[in-house]
Image 1 (cartoon, rainbow, N blue to C red):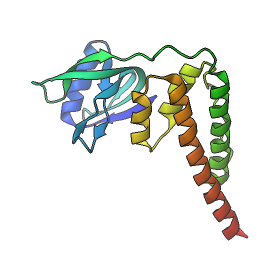
Image 2 (image 1 turned 90 degrees about the horizontal axis):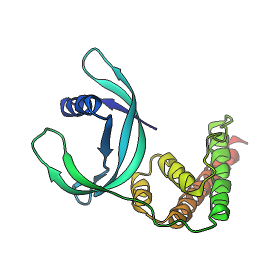
Image 3 (image 1 turned 90 degrees about the vertical axis):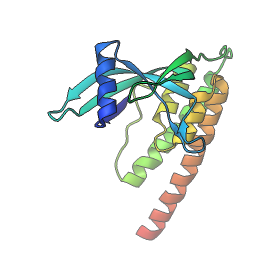
Length: 188
């Protein structure tokens, strides 16, 4: 789920248009190297919209399917484009061991995060069992690492995506463990 606060006039117009149609729009990361939107994004379905008195909106969206922009269509104050949908390659027969390894690293990250925050953080109950769904869930949950999320979004191989997620989570785990050790050293 991605909560968005819509305040710019052009995006208010876009969301009103989207809500009048199918409630679906595309989300693209701004690429600072290209100085424009990334080539690959994800469609988002609006499932809740709260309109504010001044025309702003708070919407809740759910990522649906990846796409590649083929070309842009100009004429509106917001970007529109022609796209092609992107699917994953055929899934390797047994990714459950790989997925299990990623989940174990995720558990460590959650425990260490709770320790640093000095509160219990519950392990998500809605964690998917299917390796493909798990890989998407983890990719969408790695907050604050936009470039890494974009890299994961662009991957079409589930096994490679899970392995990369394991690398990212392992790096986060090392950082959290170091911060926890420093905090403990200074609290005595």
